[in-house]
Image 1 (cartoon, rainbow, N blue to C red):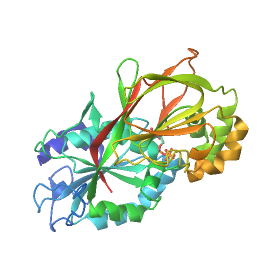
Image 2: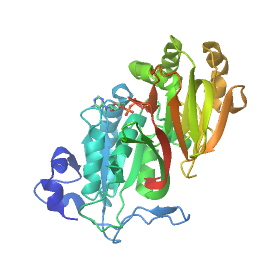
Image 3: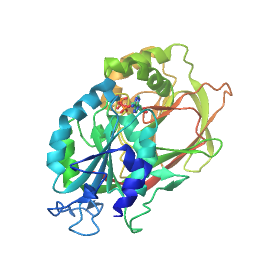
Image 4: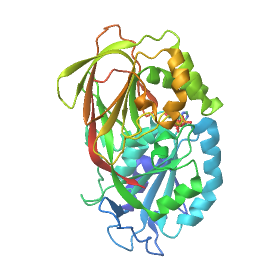
Length: 370
Ligand SMILES: Nc1ncnc2c1ncn2[C@@H]1O[C@H](COP(=O)(O)OP(=O)(O)OP(=O)(O)O)[C@@H](O)[C@H]1O
């Protein structure tokens, strides 16, 4: 590790270095006294956090959204920081970087990967995780380290501390910081799939959880205004979204096959993982290790259908409901046949300003600390 490069870069001057008395004067970032915790090699898909040498300490960068969960993330982070410092002091060099606003986490992540971080850990909700995931890519390619050997790869980690924290639910993780710190300490890596959305002009946008179109995306857009009400924001957002809503005729092309007409679409949801909207199990068969998405299409729903079937959306039994279909896809293209526009799209709960031309899976492209 070329420590001077950490210290001279814009990035490393922006972040706080933990567990170091004179961080800017000396490469104490990566001081090691104990060997790292042994990796778990119990599964072919899994391997321990990548140490190039058994004596080298891991460099962990925590990207914290202090405004997540209406400010609770920042407060909890301050409380766990002393524990985190003592828990990792001997085996890891830990850095924290607080985001200053939307999209900052993307830049922090890119810079951390380029500077050779072993793991970038999102601390916050799905929005923060989404930005960190987007920071793993640049100009259509995975970001790589400028200072490490080509085989080096930076792992993605998560301390879920958001309002919905929906991605974490697929793995059975709760908003439990101590549990998350133990997971990161064990450092078991698992390759996971990522979704990529291509817009009309060829721009690419990545997601890790669920990308969805029309009513659910509009609901998410409104929900973001009501985060102070906690998970209830998603129900309020959905009810508000039904005002002025029209089911829309779309056409879709699945797995590069033929175009199919999809009349009166209420929502089209493409799941890399299972949950969105604060715990709705919208794509119950999705698995981020499968190399495929689950695409669930809701058609011709009225507002009262949503109320009557809400419990089924939460427990994932909605696939047997009339006008709900599900299929396994590795790519899906969507076109609005109405030509009226006004169709919302979100990815990982973040509003996206364009209708995607294509959504496709990138299999096993990121190693996640699971
Ligand atoms: N310093 C900041 N000030 C204001 N907004 C920020 C800041 N840092 C990040 N953000 C934005 O906050 C948004 C929401 O963050 P996050 O997802 O962590 O929390 P949440 O919305 O409460 O959780 P969830 O998405 O799981 O419901 C993100 O879209 C991100 O762009």
